[in-house]
Image (cartoon, rainbow, N blue to C red; front, side, top):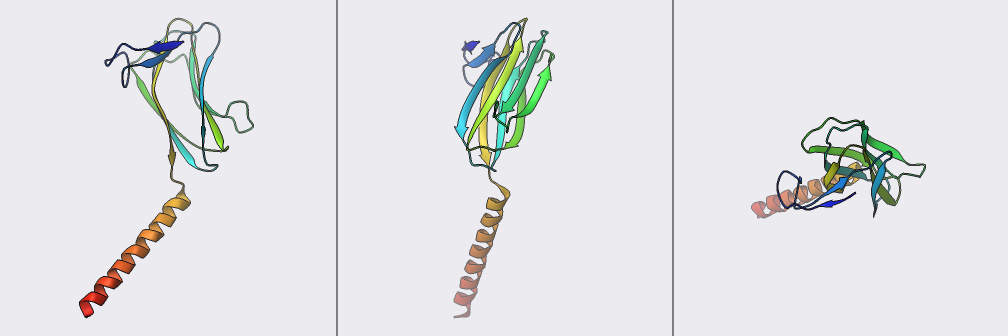
Length: 150
């Protein structure tokens, strides 16, 4: 496991570097924890490149080792391909959320790049924003009508 930095080009998906994982016989776990708001949506995106070797596995999980653990993606023996872009959506169940990539590739490398986890507005916040914008529009319309009547 390491970081591969050939510079821009087909060996990386975005930027100059990508993580590469080469293991034999077991999964390697790459994880990151970050603060979240319980109940808020999270969009996770990433690019990964399998080499087609077997046995191999690529999975994405949240909150491993807790009662809230969930697997968002799990692919056994993926076929060789150029970078694949994955996007999964989940909801934060804890105030600190851990995103984990589990990777195994006995015969070569699986590359991982361009990982992001972005909070999405919850529906109640969007509704509140809509009500606020409608109130602002009505207020401006009333003021315009009053100024035209004078």
